[in-house]
Image (cartoon, rainbow, N blue to C red; front, side, top):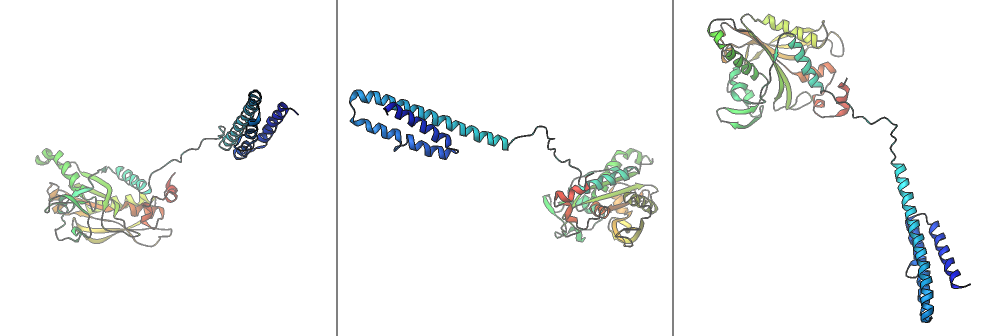
Length: 354
């Protein structure tokens, strides 16, 4: 067998070995057998040392041609393996365009927001405006203007979040209720109609609710440092406690969709109303049937508060109430832990989406 046949067989053997390599690692091992430092091509090159110059030229050229053929076969197999791996990856990551797209789940309102919207809609149907005010409030609007004396427990650092700003005599705080909007709204209303009032005319009635966030140092299963409140106010020349009972009874029965709901106005005390009453409700059926549940505080607006509105308490009278939308939400939906509203658990919140 001459040298040409030997080199042809070597190229054929290399191609066969490369073809049987199923992974890049196998292919590199096969390459080493033919083109490595101890490979067959290298061994052939070493054997040329004993040849004449003319033989070296001819044999060297033949070996180089065989080496080039083997390298071409190696590169071809490398590309084939790379193409096969890419094809495998593409199949694994294939996108079936005939499938429907993945839609983002539709969001919705928080259950407390649903309650606030419901409250606003019901009182809006009774002619009440909706007022919004600052959550960082002054001592005057939060306490003093509402007939709350300086030694009242609510002013204690243990009950109220005081914040930077203001002065020692008039500090700023996170409002403890939305009642300051009684004064803010009424003062603006009176200012708007001052000329009519001074002329002895009849001022349009003040009829407003003020829903919003409030803050107190309190946290357990039924209390949160941040919670919601809705204040209501109706001031006019002939607004009585009877009107309070009618308005709030109608609201509760509409809110809970129960004409058989029973309300009880229980005597109590608040600095900004006189007389004052806690409002309890009793469901006619269901798991809470037969129990009295407190839902609001209320009463005739105190004369000192009316004066701080810029009105004459001998001429203008009215009522106010304050209720907790969080508690109403708990009662409406049967939630027994207030903290669930603030945990942000999608499993819980998704139950309230329509």
